Image (cartoon, rainbow over all chains, first blue to last red; front, side):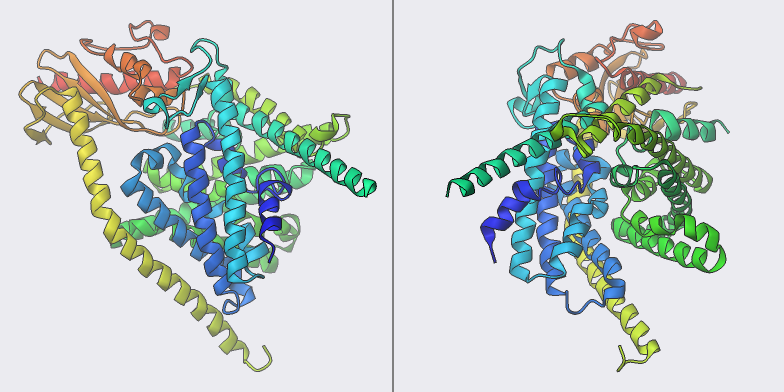
Length: 214
Length: 192
Length: 184
């Protein structure tokens, strides 16, 4: 088991959002304020860890013909638990994310990791994978949120800081509100992925140079 | 009649499932490299969405009667998965021509959040049986419209030069953004 | 596969799936029994707060006998200073649930938004406890008859970039005012 490698993969080289392009519905739809991004990120991470652990533990018991149905049932169970808990204890978040909480069921990150990783690896490795992929997802969401909120509403930390109003950085009359609308979602994600591709190229070149120097 | 027309306009244009509501982005990005595959996917999704909307309307009534509303997500997704499976088996046996055209897309539809999304929206809005089914079909047509338009843009974009780091998905996403910008023009559109 | 007959194999598949579903169902029932009272209580508190925000002195009774021509009024509460109407106009994304207080002269006492799914930073401002949100909601106070946004020739200043949400709120207020007029 290689924790550092898995962490690197989750964060950058195999980031669920920017490289695997999984779970894009929620990435585009709810990234309008920091509160949403962090909330969604944590909800998905929690579900991902639980489902990875359970599916990995049951991987030898579930016949392969019905594995997808079995995985979906397990995932839907965890999602409903999180949905109910949020409704009861953090109603503001549940209201703000709305239908995208139940839609975590079909968030391809979770099914993708279940099928691609948890069904083939040990419980411990799957748990680590859940944590790393979850963190990678959360970071990608937070970046999207910060950019869209700053350009679209001119604030930082909406829903969290300064009594929920967020800290105003750009005066109210200037922000381009298209950025919090669908257009901004597509554009921001495009630029974020382009940025990460550029970063990975740079890192690769650096590594090559290092090896050449050796 | 007004309600039906309203649902059609809103599902196709003003509240387009992909470009405004962000349901079903994964297949939108994944299966939009060619116009004909995009059209096939769109048709398959429309079919399943209409069927799932109709079936889940009944299922939801049963859940409410049994006081099991908290099981909605679990039961709906299982229903959708079974519908997809049944449709696949039925087409394979009875309409092989259609199966050939749509078959490869069917397994992907279970995890298309447009399907679960439309079912959940139907329940939230309290649509009756007819309106639920129409909303499902219209949402699917909206999906088809968006994915076919997007595929035709992508076919051209892929042939053009662009900065190295924008190649592939980033430039596709930016084209999708511009398409969404165009659809924003419909948002003022309201009838009645 | 070879050791099992076909029927037994299919039975095993079905049984595995059934067991998983049953376990999930039982677990959910458990969680639901914990969260349900909490959610109900939260909703009740929210309604209570919304009524108190728009109807000074709160309410005494819930009225079930009212005439609603718009089909948007879902609940009517009566208090010493007037009525509070729960109305559900269609917003940009989904229906908005809001409370409108109306005094005995048919003037708006205040509005408060109970739940909504409007776009964060745009339509959602209507419900926010921010200065912009307060300013938007307080402009309805004292209005009577029929209200509309300035774009449609009325007196209400729409929220920036959220004309549809602002119109929806006006529709809700109008429904409440019409219902109040029917109550007399």
